[in-house]
Structure formats: structure tokens, C-alpha cells
Image 1 (cartoon, rainbow, N blue to C red):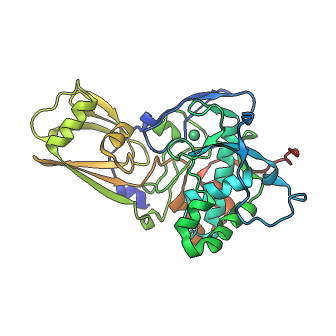
Image 2 (image 1 turned 45 degrees about the horizontal axis):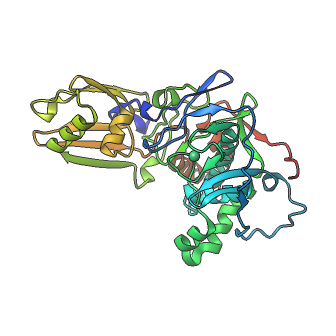
Length: 356
Ligand SMILES: [Zn+2]
């Protein structure tokens, strides 16, 4: 297994941990960047759109018959974007999420897997209020919820390829209309990330909440990601300064070679914890402090510098987008991809949404 060769140093990314109790399960927050950790709280009913919410104009080129449309087009999502709160049809929202989260150049089946994961994640969020934005079920900040790219942004990004790429994205969402992943008949917390170390992380190791469907699985083909491996080298003096500013009780002396000890790792290689100057840090805390791509890292130090070498990009939990890409290239369809990354889940067709 290639991941086994990656033996990298890793710590608990519990800094991202957000706990909430739903039906007895402790679930993590789907944040990737460690900058925001809003707590989720159980909500008995879906969030009702605020009176000020407005429907985003239909500008995705959908040319079907609205009267005849069923499925996602009859589901609504309240979305907080930079310009305020919007009340959007599910399919339009998902066009923006898939476009914002995965390159249109990825294989069709990987894009479809992304669409189902995004739909499932949205459904999950619709039944759990987020304290960061209690009036909106989701937001467009990828550090909090999922990225959302508007048609205007994509026209700028894609230029003359806009029509072609938008059609690819729309097809991924439309071809999986109303499909979601469930566990015990409820939508799962379908988190995903860019690139794993070659094996995904279990949610318990990253956020502290164990979810049966977010376990560690092997994930091949990650080397194709431009962010599969990276290096961060800093001066020992700066390293020391950053550590002491964040953790004033830390006692660091002598050569940087002796600063980091007792590194504990997850099965996937992520740093669960390490000790530095008498203080125990999680991999997530180290990731945040030094701007690392992931918490799967090794540390090599000399007298004057400290070098972190990372494998993977993101929190490492759930579906790896580059892993999905590799599986699709290898012939897997979107169902096989999703059921590989989200163990023991069921692909479910949602019941018809009532007319609004
Ligand atoms: Zn959010």
C-alpha cells in the first residue's frame, strides 16, 4: 500500500473539533481551515427562510420546464453569501458548490460523487442550526460550510469556456437529482477534502466525534494532486517565537532538534499529538500555527531551521476529491466512489419535495 510508505508525522486536529449531539451521535463540524469553529447545535426543525431572503435569479442556463420540474428544483436552501442572505433552489445552489469545490476538468463520475456529497451535506446542515449564521442553513465560506461560486464568478474564472464547463457541472448535479447518502435513514455529515495522505482520517482522530461512516480508508492516486506534498521551512528563531506567542507557558531551549517530542499518529499518519517545551499540541494546532496543508507532517530540525513536510491537503476526513478522481479514471462510478469513502451508508432517493 502506498500510504504505508508515507510514514508521516501527524497530531489530532481537534482544533477543528466541533461537537454536537444529534440522536446520541457526536458529530464534527465540516470545517477545513482551522480559523473558524462555530458550534453546531441540534435543531428540531429546518431553518425557515428569513423574510429578507431573496431568490437568486436563475442564471445557470437551465432551460427546462419549471412547471414540470421535480426533485432538487423544488427544494429550497437559505444561503448566506457575501452579498447577503439568499433563498435558492437546491439545484442552483449545488451548481455553485460543485463548481466551487471541484475542477470541471475532473472525470464525470467524480463530479457526480461531489454533487451527491454536497447535496447530502446540505441536507444535513438543514436539520442542524449553525451558530455562525442561525438564519441561514449554509454559507458560502469554505472554512465554515462549502465554497459557492456564482455564475458571475465562474464567467470571470472560465472565460470562453464558461458555457462548456457550466454544462458539465449542471449535468453532474442534474444526473444525480434527489440522490443522497444516508445512515440509519438520516443524511450523513458528508465532509470531503482535497487530497489525503494516501489514507483518509477517521473523524474521531480529527474532531473527536466518532461517526461510523467516517472511518479511515485507503485512497490511491493522491500523488496527482499538486498539493500532495509540500514543505514549509522556517527559521528556528521564528518557529520559537510563534510557538511562544501562542503558548506562553512553553519552555524551549537549546537546539530546535530537541523541541518536538512524543509524536503520536493516527492510522492514516496524521499527527494526533506531540509535545513541545512541556506543552501538548494537536496536529490541528500545529497546522494552524504554521500554515501547513494538513496535519500529516514530519518535522526535521537543524540548529537554525525547522522544516515541516506535509502529505495531503485538507482535514483528510470523508471523500478525497483527488482520490475520487483516481477512482473515476480507474472506472468506478459515483456510487462506488461514495460508498468507498462513506462506509456503510445507503444511497437514497429523496422523497418528492412539496411545491412551495
Ligand atoms: Zn457556514
